[in-house]
Image (tube, rainbow, N blue to C red; front, side, top):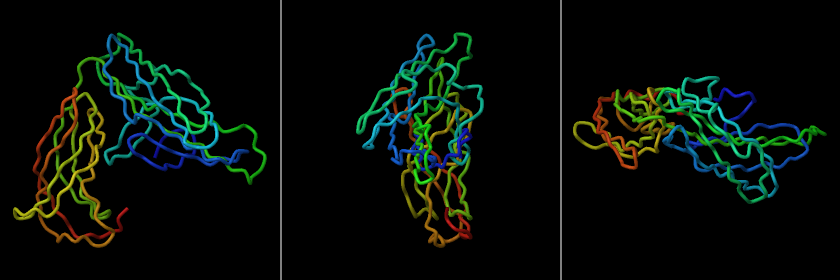
Length: 276
């Protein structure tokens, strides 16, 4: 899932990121890390932006962590991915304090972030994910002693100049292999955005189903298939046929809520696979 230099197994993805890898080491405690906020959005003033991330240790043992950053994106189907490079990489302009720290049991520490954007950089949105990762002890004594490396992350978006998202709904589709109803949304603007979708599914003017999605990140100048509804792993109760998906996208921009109404046809075919 992530292009990062360790064999990581993704555990949870909730906007911020939590991963773990198993290593042989003396300490077999599973460090329980948390990070908040999960998303930081800020406007650079004269090339400068400051923010704070709280790193929480929910375990009963002290842990040692290191802080680092990397560029990232979200793929069309919503998978989070770190990148080796990006034109809009914020990480070279980020300073952390501290870079390594010890967190006592059942407590938290603050990480101060300072973004200093070069005046010669073009205007736009600069992005990075800031990771906190547990450090594994150097001494490895026995194959019976298994430790866990945990990594959590906060996505950071810093705007240089006036940037804004421009959303458009392209179409809706039904994935017959995974039994999922999706909405393809295009962001033609220069700022990333996290809209939720309030939707209704109709057939012949009758409302068949309705709901509301969780916010989903759409990166600037990119598109994303937003999951509207994941049906059960049994054959769909919806008969095959032509439907209408309508509703609105809702997101926050400049401390105000914006919305975009949509109405698109969708053909729901017979379910042929196992839901994943």
